[in-house]
Image (cartoon, rainbow, N blue to C red; front, side, top):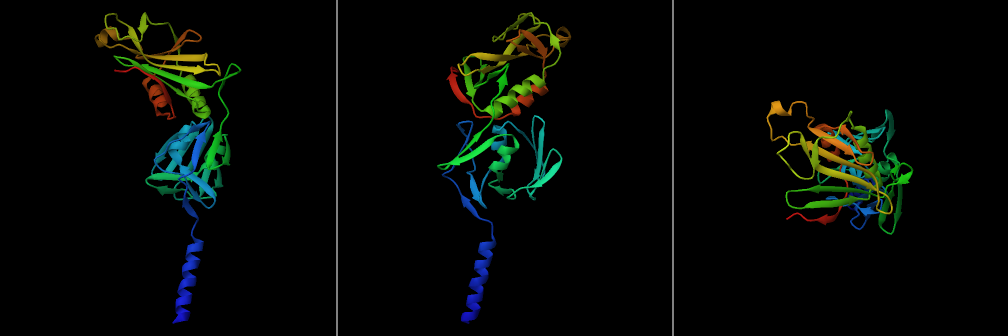
Length: 278
């Protein structure tokens, strides 16, 4: 009887030690470019690797995330990453390699190694005093480094000004704006923050994006305008629905709803500087 009991204990120990190491890491903070990244799912440690929720970290690194069943595709600039929650295999620009730790699901979130994500998109990772820091190269415009992306939008009463200091996110945001510029056009006859419906061909500004240097001065600013449609379709024929104004160069371009949706899909951490909405 004792021998049988000993065998059972031995088998139990073998099973336990063969399982992957998994531990909660609730005391670990993740900072990307100095900003603490909030997440519904806490980081965890598995097989000595810090595992993080894929979407929130990827988006704060400036990557687009697309799902198809159990397969996820991450894209940023000229990098494409394809991985599957059922496999250790990962494909980077068509070249297959292996992850140290297989992705897994925790509270409906896909967990992947943080170092893999960060280094894939050209960022450096360090772990000091329970804080994981991810540092990415900053956006440079005309030889000057961008410190902050400032977003401003207004409502009927008041407006909001908020800022992002995420280097990777800001770079992706800037590239997305520039890559979606359409043909050059002439400035509209009437455009402003105000919604004015008395002039045919008027445009109102929905968003203002300002890339600021270390001193807080503007390096590049883009304003997005939408056509005021308080006229008949016949009267509005020939007027583009969306325009974007490169304020720095004082040049207008065609834009599109699709481009706006692409911008809105980018997720980053913003700090509210001012909120006067009442």
